[in-house]
Image (tube, rainbow, N blue to C red; front, side, top):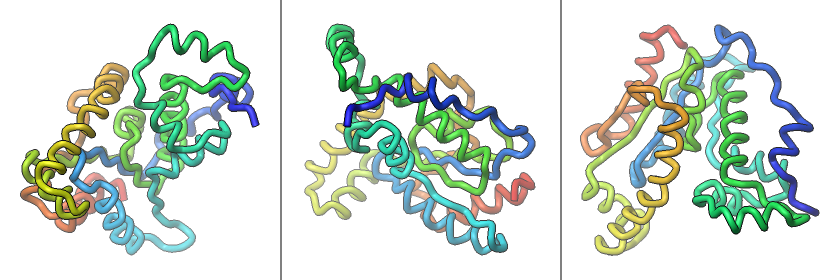
Length: 227
């Protein structure tokens, strides 16, 4: 099946108008440095938050599922979409690619569609969104909390080395490579969503264990009367 242009897809399937912003959320976005285990925090929050709601309401977590949804729209696999999302534009290559029958969506198109998906999920509410530029995409929506996880490089290197069975040298190279990959996207999202501060809560994972952070985030939501 020919790959679908996201621009064409969005034209044929325009985004639904946002619901009344007062009705948005509750939602949480989690941004993290590589090695800070944002998805693990998301799972802990999922357990804590679902203990506070009654069926049929339930909290959901989204990470790779966002790319999976996009993959189903474009007939591309999620791995290719993620690679393209992070790829810097090359004018000549992109021009000739745009002429082909099986046109691959650009990183710009992919990021725009991901933003739409994230905003729709956040507006629906009771979601935890991991990465994908979620904090920027939802910066103007109420009833949400943007969380950022950071830690010194040496701490993150030890985490990666332990979990992946690598030497400290191998883990450090991996951490720095991943940070370099993310730097391009970070600059794009900062330019597009220049909110300062970018996050509501920033945690040092070398000081606070994830279980403590999860409890604090839930308490913050309660204090804000978001839940």
